[in-house]
Amino acid sequence: MENLEIIKGGIDLSSYIMKRCLMVIPVILGVILLIFIILQASPGDPARMILGEAASNEQVEALRIELGLNDPIAVQLGRYLLNLVQGDFGTSYVSKTPVLQEVLTRFPTTLLLATLSVVFMVILGIPIGIISAVKQYSWVDNISTTIALIGVSMPTFWTGMLMVMLFSLYLGWLPASGFYGPKYWLMPALSIGIANAATMTRLTRSSMLEVIRQDYIRTARAKGQSERKVILNHAFKNSLLPVITMIGIQLGIALGGAMVTESVFSIPGLGSYMLSAIKTRDYPVIQGGVILIATSFCIVNLIVDILYAFIDPRIKAQYKSKAKNIKKIQIEEDNVA
Amino acid sequence: MSTVESAVKETNVKRRSQWFEVWRRFKRNKLALAGLVIILLIIVLALLAPILASEGYDQQIISDSLLTPGKEGHILGTDNLGRDILVRLVWGARYTLQCGLVAVLVSAIGGCILGSLAGYYSGKVDNLIMRVMDVLLAIPGMLLAISIAATLGPGMRNAIIAVGISGMPTFARIVRSSVMSVRDMEYIEAATAINAGDMRIILKHVLPNVMAPILVQTTLSVANAIMQTASLSFLGLGVQAPIPEWGAMISSGRSYLRGYGYMVTAPGLAIMMLVFSINIFGDGLRDALDPKLKT
Image (cartoon, rainbow over all chains, first blue to last red; front, side, top):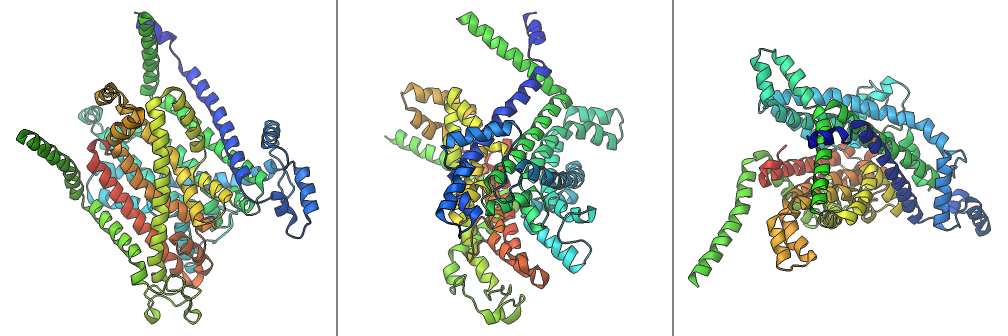
């Protein structure tokens, strides 16, 4: 009786979502702080980088004062945060344009690349994973598991270069660099997609194997459902949770690893922009880029977490029973006290 | 006396048989065994580099540059500076392995310290440590490694530190949850009861009992660390020329893709083989150490 009331009064889904959203804020603040500290600690004077070796010490000093580089770190951080809140990510030392604008014009390219790679990952990885789970220990399973392991073991930039050699230089089918249309998108997205598809295959396989021995699968078969339906509707749907998490994580990894792939194919995205910013010590650009990528990574993870709660009724129930247990323990503690 | 001796003997036998059991289970997995053999072979090659390839990794014979594989006794050909690629690969095994192992050592030690503190003390300490780890995990690993490497400047040591730090949060999480799972066990209570200090309990009672997941994570992390350092070197932020770390070798062959693709293919295959072997070895080790962990 008492428990029932507690369940009703327990933490419900909407406040869970709310809480989960709020939890993102300190993490992003932490990222900003971390990147700020990391860049502060780096050697080399941005003012000197901007003006070049020929500039006099007085000019460098004047620019340092102009950029506010001589202020205490806390002041610089405070100023940076204050500007961030107003949507001002600072000005690029090199191009003298606002960072936010520069970063945002390049971000869609990187996002498109990452999304396409995830699409390839899903198209390649999930079906192979399902097949090898259904036909566990068969030759199909052995071959696809081995291929998946090889796929995980290939550096993406190397896969990309092999593709360039084969499809651009030898066969001449696809352009080796640039990012101007579907023809250009194929190889970069595939080179990331293949490596991730391998991870996906492994995950789907193990997740399916866990589900496939359950009683409800036997029940579904017993009631005469077609094998196709048993596998897709009953087994796969129930093994979907880790798969969805993986999609979110891989999207983040693809965003974070964009520098490498963009460098292989000379794609004018955020990654290659940040790479050139690293070479010229263009701090505001590096900061802006990392913050943007980390924020999108957090948002993707947030969406995955929220989707979780909607897709899986067990999690909802678990959440409620957890709330119940906490309350129960609290009541017991109160009683003891 | 004799009973004590026999008891000691018995415990010794038991001790051995536990590892023997792991080895027996591991041995059954032929693929994992093959992985172990390849890893050992590469380690031997790396150790014997000064004997096998006594000319050193930077011997340039310009007249012999860009010889395709098989020509004039160069099995894998020569690069643009006339250096034998096979020789560089053998030397490169040293640097590649070193990068992977040391970076993981950094992550494992850091992660074990932070994770066991967080898991053992819980409360405020746990909260503080894990929130910092959350922040580190919010930046995709490769991006974090790139940012740190960019700050520290290029070079092998800095690349190792960067990759090591970016791998730390994962370790901390695994160690923390493992420590929490044994923290309330009776043997920990017993250790507390005989007035053992916290340090002693963590080092002697907690960590040895959570070794299995840490060991597996360590193995699989080496593979990841090798890939990450290779990527850093490829971007020019990691190991610098002329050191023949395999990623750096791929990077230096980049401009010769047209016609001289073997400069890129060979070191890439080497990375693939090493990482593949470590992965299958790690999978086998996980299944052997704890069948429950099997995914």
